[in-house]
Length: 128
Image (tube, rainbow, N blue to C red; front, side, top):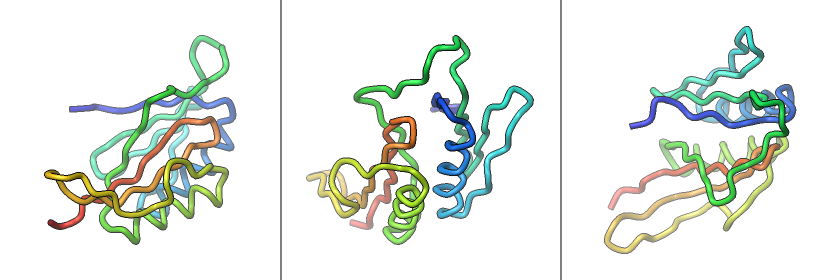
């Protein structure tokens, strides 16, 4: 459904350290910096861009918004979370762990805010 997601940053170098770490923890490659200074991450068919806001105003996070990343296992989810915290991310929501969605499935989730406050979620759908 989505072609890509873009988040704003006020410090591209700080964001590169953070996003390189969380994508590296799940087998991704470091971000590519394009001619305009934007960071581009491509992994498992998805694309995330990190950029200074085009309008010149400070980047802000979307209150109520969350960007979710699919994980292959609870262990990969934990590695993603640890890498994020070690590289400037802030834990939010409940600690990483299983959440039960009655009638749907069990999910293993971890939440972080990136250094600019964007809310991120690592999600692993557990076997029924």
